[in-house]
Length: 476
Image (cartoon, rainbow, N blue to C red; front, top):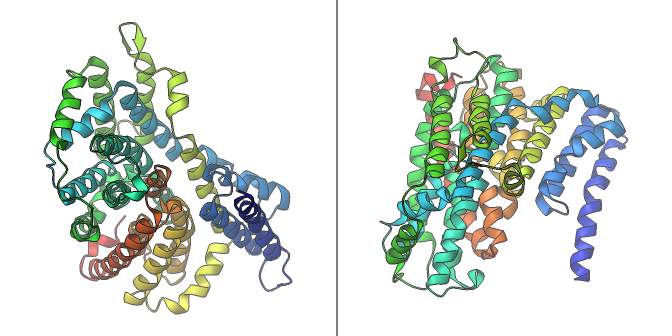
């Protein structure tokens, strides 16, 4: 216990010490604001990696640091904490909380799992597939939090009590965690990194609204190939201690029957989420009629209705319940990542780093894809995927704009790589939830390393081919 407390103290102090050393370093050739921004970047990365405090708490550091050291007016980043995309996250989180309130999340998972079968490897692959598909439309943490309790219930049913000691149990939780990462970049709704990327592109590249459908069409080739490669990897990556899971289908069927018929609240909550999602994806058809009704407010509108529509005198969702079950930390983490990206951009730090990277990017071809995808993959393994995007997207945009090149192909490539966090609990919401349930972290790190290397190779090859042979890949 004393050793653990000593390590925590070291990490608590390590971040601010590194920040101060950089800020006060006798390096007049590097502007004060750049030194401060780089120091803040390292401080936040340190705390995000080692978590001496909650990840969300680290999201408040930009406000504290700027108010004290004034290398950028704090008012410049205040809008980051009330971003429109935070409203979207809020609305989507409320709608998924209604699912939890009435058990719809459990019903959807059980319906999906009736046909899984009893093979252990099949179980691993199917859980991975379900998590992959759901995470395209729901935040990674939400999907992991909804599916893992069902897996744990099934594992207890077949006699697996200690997840860390069971190769099969750990493999199932890791499959869900990795599925949320692989599916997370398929649509903008897949998580905060995607929304943050869109915001940065809107503000610094295109100057107008980035449509959700544009994201899906540009990244569809990545989604198909990466999912296929990952499925093959999952089939051979784990060696469960049993070949067959007896009684699994009966267990799922019994659990589903015990839920009874779809209730009115479940129908309402399913309709609200589907309606908000359809409005988000069909924005181009009504944007001229309702220019202010962006996806964020579509989700918020239906979220508000959850507190209004009543069933037998009771609202679908009460605020007390929502407060206890929503992922509030996600919003602050997202805001902090947004603020960090804003600081790196407005202080000129992103451009400063970009200028250092220009010699390594060649003329923007294969070498540039190699360098930027590798940097992003490394960063997203050691810190949250949102933080990785907050760091890399501004640098990517600045680098290629300074070269006079269209940054969009490289932004898409970085966005995909930034969602590929597999090795550590700090890399993404799914791995963090799995770690919380006691998964074997050595297994996750070792298998995750090889999946990271494999998918990085795929991203480099596909990114270069798409950039070279598909002109539409450069369009936002």
